[in-house]
Length: 202
Image 1 (tube, helix red, strand yellow):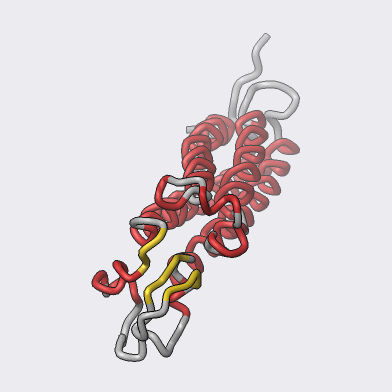
Image 2 (cartoon, rainbow, N blue to C red):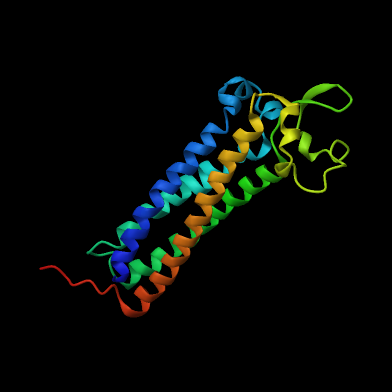
């Protein structure tokens, strides 16, 4: 496959992963499939959701870069060494966006959700319970490996599973984006050095 064709393929391949990240980040704004948390986001939403890593980073930033990368693969003025150089820069921008989405999602998984939590003492309040060492001093590993502790997040219902599923999805999609963009950077380098190897149409 020539470098121009590879650019078009990578550009198109990035679209579904970007769309998936945007959708997952939007859904994370409605934990437990309710709109209650949106009314008081600082108190009831997981902080990492509000960073919008999946929406802006792995989503919009990558989509904009993907459109331009795909365009550099077309025959015409941009389908040349200069266009390939631009595609390297755009791929690097997309890598930064993807890494932002990946890191924020990873932190969301590590820290756990914001929820109405039932403490060992019997008290209940909105907090990020899995950040509290005093509650989980008996756990030698992450809360992710102790499902029995998830049920103490009483509201929103199933919020831990909700966060784990969508943050994990953003992480996987972002990782794939990083790989695709890294390939495009290598492809663009070959395009700069060797040309796009597409025949000119008359």
